[in-house]
Amino acid sequence: MTEYAETLMDRIGRKLAASLETPSPGFVPYTHANVAALRKVLEPGDVLLIEGHNRISVAIKYLTMSTWSHAAMYVGNAVGQVTPEGERLCLVEVNLGDGCIAAPLSKYECFNTRICRANDLTDEDRAKVVDFMVSSIGKRYDMKNITDLLRYFLPTPPVPVRWRRRLLAFGSGDPTRAICSSLIAQAFGRIRYPILPRITREFRADQMARTQRREILEIRHHSLYVPRDFDLSPYFHIVKPTLATGFDYRGLTWSDQTRGEKTRAAG
Image (cartoon, rainbow, N blue to C red):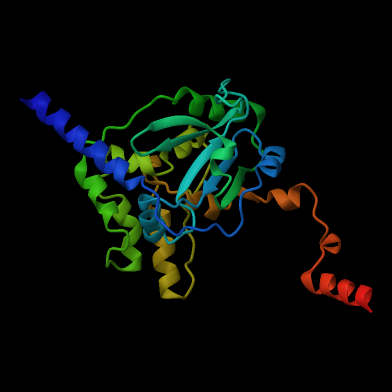
């Protein structure tokens, strides 16, 4: 009877997870990710943040007060596999319901993205981080903790700002680890690389800023890290492919210049 009940709860959890992964209508990215540019600048160990558009992404963005709802790690050629179309599987990520999987870069071609890079990783530590992520491929998460899933069906719960992030920690079961950036945080924890370590310092006078900062600094367990933490971390560089591959504003052609050229040609 116990085995049957557990199987039933697991099936219900999987269905809830699948529903949360359903895309929300009306999502339009500000700029499409330039996959060719990403390939040029990404390095193994880089964290790729993604602004997702499914139901759970909406909830995570609200609860964490951030654009970023998902994170993956770029591992280069470490997976050693390709898609049926021949594209390299170079990202390792954790998805609700699927667990830890490898994915191609083109998966996020139509999403807003951001690259976060740990500063001055040694080759040895970079290899450890990548190996940990690749060795986790195939790991699945138990979806029996229904209470951990139900919170995300209310994407904008009426809770104060200072408590929203804490709502992610409610239950702290497998579904929590599956939707957060826990695996990536765990990988960096293996080499003792900081993301948002506990820091003792004076807080700013603004009460709201003090509250939010305290909430962030108190959360340390790898299962409770969220994508935005890599963006906020003072130990990760933000890499923008357009700038990294060479950008000269003087080479841009603006619409008013084009109109002026047409006018002169007509005259």
